[in-house]
Length: 417
Image 1: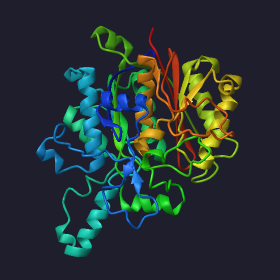
Image 2 (image 1 turned 90 degrees about the vertical axis):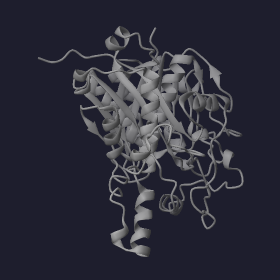
Image 3 (image 1 turned 135 degrees about the vertical axis):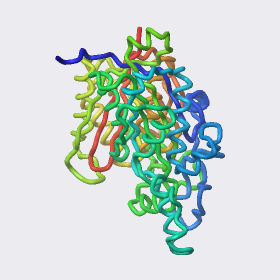
Image 4 (image 1 turned 120 degrees about the vertical axis):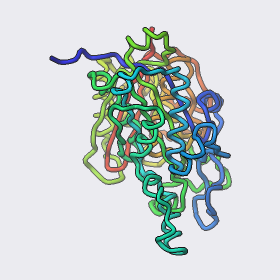
């Protein structure tokens, strides 16, 4: 017999981003329109044409990870563990032994321990293979973010990594939602992390002409929907959400940020890095999410756009949004902002950060802006909430995440009455 579908809510949020360590610091900076982007400090970027990034500045993992555990993990795992600890504390989550057996952990990671790979290659070349750390592979493998969180928090249900480029952590939240909804998990920690401010990553994206080269004005470099945008800005960090059935959350008197009501996914089936020119994949994922949530397009009040600040990507997403939401999108009734204008692009971690932003917008009635919109591109025919946050009751918010390979995810988060 089928398990009756559960309603799934978000009761904890943990954010580690270039805009702050902790949800409140990140949210305060996002709603104030303050950028977390600056010159790269994690390696010598002098020879690079793009020398800026969204780093988690002055990062100290010690409040979140004990000294013994730190030697086992790479930087992306540190961000994931910290975000998970913050989320669990925020949710005041306590689990019975029976619930631990059915507690899931789904963490999206796009690239993983790239910095550890670079360091390990240097060790082999300079000192020989016998000097390689036994922790090198666990610090590289993408699934170890979920694995380490599961170990620390004793989550003995499904533990897995979704790795779908820049849609990774949005897929993670969607899949965790489905697990709880259909009774395969009692509760879940879901989100993502990335730590790829490394020479290989920056040089690779630079070679694709994908990155902004506005090195003299780093805080103005990420400018989604602006006519003068010239590429995205690499960023790092992590975000984890606590998901649980609505009934369980209410029974324990939990604070509820928002309900997860829709999850849509699609593939462009077009090109390895370029979006389909007609925006068909993005339209399909948004429509799939609306069907999943049983909502009409005119019920969505806010979209957190994928909005990376690339010349073509922003236009294609704008057209896709207009194609799904029609006059509501082009007349300014639907608000669409890109918080990547402040955080930069967290790659595999981006979707979880932006889903958290949507949950907070639903709970608090504030929409963060798209900063650096000095002259909006006329081909981006949306109200992109330029430069200043706005207040509004958000009934339903949609978050878009699109990745290389043409993979698309749309999540819908809804305000509980």
